Structures are given as structure tokens and as C-alpha cells.
Image 1 (tube, rainbow, N blue to C red):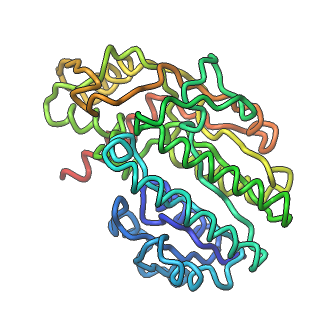
Image 2 (image 1 turned 120 degrees about the vertical axis):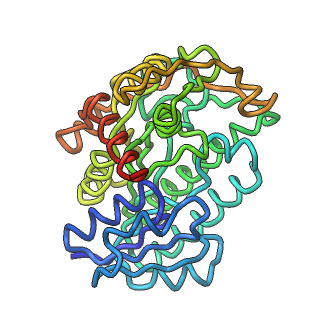
Length: 323
């Protein structure tokens, strides 16, 4: 059994990963400043004999050195997240996403610690291909548009992680997440599924940005966390970038209609322009679909849960919270 550090461990994905690692018998140290995470996300394992929770920022180098001492695995999930947060505060995005990653990689080399870097489909930028593969070119918009700061900062993280792998032999795995959804995710930062579910349960309307024909793929957090934990125990994945997500596309309009139907609510859709939601400098990507053949090759499986099953799970969780 390993001793694991999970940065951002009180967040949506991080809390599910923490639970999974504990269930497998590992020790877990969670580091989170609770800016986007929440203590309640870990209430199911609070008091676990193998869990240590530290409240603090990954931008604190002394704290990072302290929590990483003696660990066998680092799962680096802490980052500035969400399209709205990134658009509103690009300075925070860049500072949070780059400098702490470099420091953690340095600490990992010193401790010979295996390292998982949570990256994002945002690194592909405006790539126009129908399906994105890990070796595709990255195509960002102009620096005058803040939303690209997130993808650029995570791309720098990937460059750093791969450089540490090549130079020092650090066992690094990079996972590019594609629209991970599930219980505990909140809609405050632009996440579309929890936002739609909340709006449906409150009687609508469901607010759709632009024309709703944007195409996305949604994977349940349980399957994503399983892939992350498995990749970290797969030597063939070291030094590789791997798309992690579903490859089943759906338009945002279809998603909204599915949420309304499954919530059993007769609610309408309201379309608003991006400028109203995110300001005049915002640009979006029309289609975001991953090639998951590398994940299939490495693990022999990929996320397969249907959108209907995913939405039913989220709606059930939201309703239980309200009660």
C-alpha cells in the first residue's frame, strides 16, 4: 500500500479519488485551500484512520515540501478550474496552475515519487479536428482573450512534467480530462451539467449559451477516477499523455433536453449569447471529442456509462441534498 498526496483532494474529482484510494487500502494526505473544494465533499471518509487533511494553498512552498515528504504517489489535481473562473481571473489561473506544479515536480524527483498530473482538454485549444488525439497540435486563440490562459497554463504544466520524466526519469502520467461529471460537482464555475440540473429542479428555464449546438462528451467521475488510479499502476503509461473521458458526443441542446426530461420537469430552454455570460472577450470551442484508443490500449477499458445513467445519478444526488 502507498502513501498518497492528493492536491485539491476536497474538490469534486479529488474527493472521489481520495475515497477510491482509501477504499484500496492506501494512506491519503489531502491538501486543499477550499477555494473551490468543500469539507462536505469528504464527509463520507472524515475520521478515516488513513486520511490526513491539510488546509492550505499549493502556492505555499513550505507547506508543499511538508505534505510531500514521505509520500509514494502525488496526484496533482489542484488548479484554477472552470471557464467562468478563468475568464474572470486569468492572473490567478496562471499563478495557480504553473508555479506549484514546477515545485511539486522538483519535490517528486527528490523523493523519487510517482506523479499524476491532471490536465485538460482545454490544451487542444481551437483544434478543428473531429476527434482529438494526444499528439495533435495545440491551437490557442490570441492572448487578448483570457479564456486561453487556462489551456496555455496546463500545456506548460505538461511540458514541465514530460521534461522531468526525460531528464530525471520521473515516473509521470498525464491525464487530459474531458468533461468529467457526477455527484458533488457544482455549477458555480461554468460547469454545464450541474447548472442544468439545478435549473431544472428549480423549475427552469435551462440557460443555454449561444445556439446550443456545441458538442461535448461527458464521463462519470467514478470511471475517470478508476482510470487515473489504474494508469498510475501501469508502467507503460509513464511519460505519456492520455485522454481520459467518454468519446460519445452530444450537443449542449440535447443535453439540456435530456436533463429536463429526466428531472421530470416541464421547463423551457432560454438561449443567451456568450457575451452576456462571460463578457465580450470570450471565445468557445464548437466540438470537443477525444480519441480514447490510447487509454483502451493501456488499460483495456474506457468510460462507458451512458449519459442517461450519469444524469440520473446526478439528479438523484441533487434531490437528496435538497431533502
